[in-house]
Structure formats: C-alpha cells, structure tokens
Image 1 (cartoon, one colour):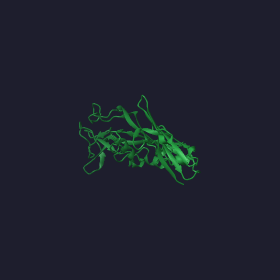
Image 2: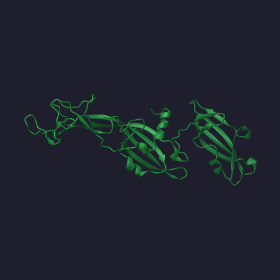
Image 3: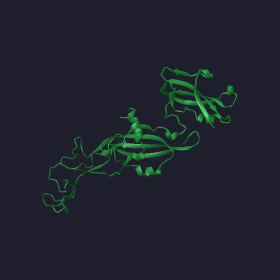
Image 4: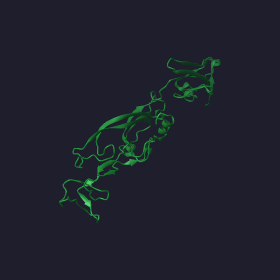
Length: 300
C-alpha cells in the first residue's frame, strides 16, 4: 500500500490562513492532499503517515514560524474524487507549551527544569575568612555555633518508558565525581528519584520521573577540627598528650598535620573527609539536555 502527499492551497477548494492577536500570538492552517492506491486505506493510516505531526513548528516551504506549533491534525475524505482514495489533511498551528500537552510518545518529550531552595541549619566551624570559630580560650564552642543555610535545589522531571530501580539504588544520595551541569565535582548531591506511573492517550504505560539535586558550593565533604587526646611521638607511636605539669589532658588538644600537638596559641587546623560516595553523573543521561539549555541561553 502506498500514499502520496502534496501540500495544497486554494486551487484544491480549501484555503490556507493565518491570524495574529493583540498578544502577538500567531496561528496558521495548511493542507495536504493524500492519494492512496487502495480505497481500504482509512483516515487513521493517512494521518499516521502524514508529513506533519503534533508539536512541529509551522513550515510551508516558502515560509516558517518557529513560534507556532502544530496543535491539531484532521483528515477528511475528498468525496468529490468518488474513488475512496483521496483525502484532505488539515493542520492547525498556534502558541504551544510543549510541556503542557502530552505527545503521542510521551517519553520523547523534553525534560522540565525548575529551581528552588531548601532552608536548614548546620554547625559552623570556620568564619568568612576561613579561620576556626573558637572561644577566647581557643576551644570550640559547646554547643557549637549554628548557621542558617540555603541549598539551591534543582528539579528535573522527565517522561521515561520505565522506572529504573537500579538507578535509584546506585545514585540516590550520591555526589558527582566529575564536573556536571556546569559545576565542579562534589558540588551536586542527588536527593531523590521518584516516579509516577502514567498512561498515554493510546493506553500505553510510561513513567513521570522526578530527579532532585542539591547544590553545595562548599563541596559535599565533612570538615572537623584536628584535635585529640593523643599525639604521635618521634617514633610514630600514639602517646597521651600531657599538659605543662606533665599530667594527661582531660579535653581534646589541637594537632599539627604530622600528628603532634600544637603549641599554645597556634592556629588550629581542620581535616576534610569524603564521607559521601561519588559517582559518574552520566548515569542520569542528562548531559545532552544541559548542553541544549546552555546553547539556547536558557541556562547559564
């Protein structure tokens, strides 16, 4: 079975048209003639193979409008032909939010991106200059100083053909081992991966999957004051730290990088630990989407 399509205008008896309203929104109507080689071919097959699809931008060959999208396609038999083999396809175009309407194949729809913030409190160990926050005696505060912090939260929602439980186990709670979405390694943490089952107009099941990532410009690491009750001696053995009277100390003492105790009045140091597993964020398959957003100027 074969179907031939031809873009047509007023000579066919159907008129092309365009309108523009006070908000500068533009609509169009254009038509094709389809000729089949068998009268048993119906309107569904003619529409399915037509040279236009829902979501495509208006393009008539000699003119185009990337701000007007195909919203409706109708197929009617041309009864004047009297052979059951000729059809008129009409396409209507207009302003169209591609995320507000489900395409025939929902998981081919582009992801939706949004940003927000999460407010919380965390222990503050260093000040704005990177110096340790200590009391007048050089000890950490007890209870510690708390700070109000805001994490930027990035949410990406995408239609997918299935829900990958393996990805949830692999990626949830993990940080990025390599630069990702324009930020360095260890800045992103996957907070959650959630999925909702949905159904397209033809009854096929797909999943609406939501990814949430928190952005921490101080890196997802743990920073603690380097102190203890013991130090390393010249032989590399751990021995009790003694005070100036030769007695064992009763509270932790700041340590040097080599494990020896610091002298009184020396600036304390901090140890940084990677406590969250880092993975390659390419497992999310979002790199192409990020590059598209940047290329279009929608993300900086």
